[in-house]
Amino acid sequence: RMVFLGSGFGVAASEWYPDVNDTGYDYELPELLSPLAKYKQDITLFQNLEHANSKDGHSGSTFWLTGADRYAIPGQSFNNTISVDQVAAAQFGLETRYTSLHMDPGSDLTGHGPGSISWNRQGKPILGLPHPVALYHKLFSSDTLPLEQRQALLADERSALDTVLENAKSMKKGLTKTDIDKVDEYFDSIREIEVRIAKDEQWLTVPKKHPTQNIKEPAPSLEGAPAVEMVYDLMVAAMQVDASRVFTYRLPSDSFCESIGSSYTAHNLSHHNGPDTIRDSKLRDQTHAKLIAGFIDRLKKTKEADGSSLFDHVTLTFGSNLRLTHSLNNCPTLVAGGGAGFKHGRHLVMENKTPLCNLWLSALRGSGVQVDTFGDANGVINELFEA
Image (cartoon, rainbow, N blue to C red; front, side, top):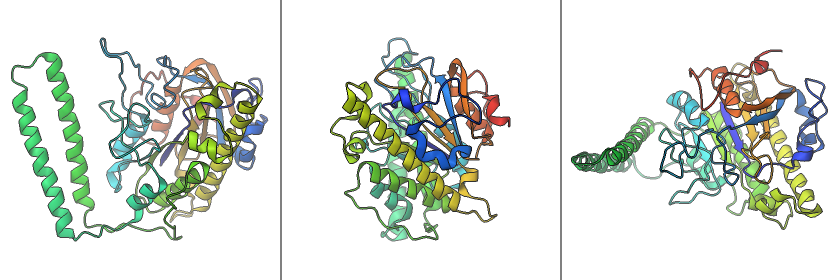
């Protein structure tokens, strides 16, 4: 399994990273990460990872898992590419009810703009589930509609899609190359919907599984840090029943700050304008570390049929495309879990400007995903596979 936890506003950098000269296995864990002390041997901290193409200091989430060049296409002000989670999902999702699960508290019923961390093959944002309640119902609520009605709804959806496809094909006559490219992009989106419908049909008669430990429906009032903790619980439950193997979570920002007692927005905290914002930034980061420690604890306690733990089969990453303020260098990056075969317990200081995509490529290959490269990667991080 793979889990990506994106914190779009960076960290309190001066006290989040270990000393740059204190590397290897015996490094001193920074105070802000002290809640993870129990699992120090299970995590790896990085320095000097970044995206060479990141030039927009206001897009801390957008390109984190893609490494794309926003201005790669002449004449367009925005471009993105597939995110690493979706590369993994194309392989891991073949056997699960949900190809991947994406949580995004900024989502709504109409979708969202370029704040997502999960992007499809066409470089379009993937709609996320906005609240733990939505994730709970997607995972465990039974559909009350009779099977025949659900089958009829999918048949109607297929019929409507066929009509749209025929109309789109007739539009191609007489179009310019630019317009044809746009229509082809539209066809790609239609094909993705076709795949989704086919998968819905495949699982239509398969009852949803429930974890061995009963998990209650979250309260709609959950926000901020309590909501994050509940999402982590639901992710563990989803892994336990093998509902999905790929998870992304665009972590809440302003509601998280409010839940820890801060009166500042996440954006204001990232600027560190004065002692109060620095204090609250540290509290935010330490709270995240505490929640990740709890997540690791639950993954370790949840056993597979062969006696191993879920943690042994998970690659969990916490990080951001931003360091702090609008700085795009030295992306804060923490990795845990045995899913990719990484040798943990170290502080790794890479050469300056090492591509963050090298980590994504390492995680993919270590997890058994057959890819030649990813983004602007120039190789894997060999140290991760060496004791």
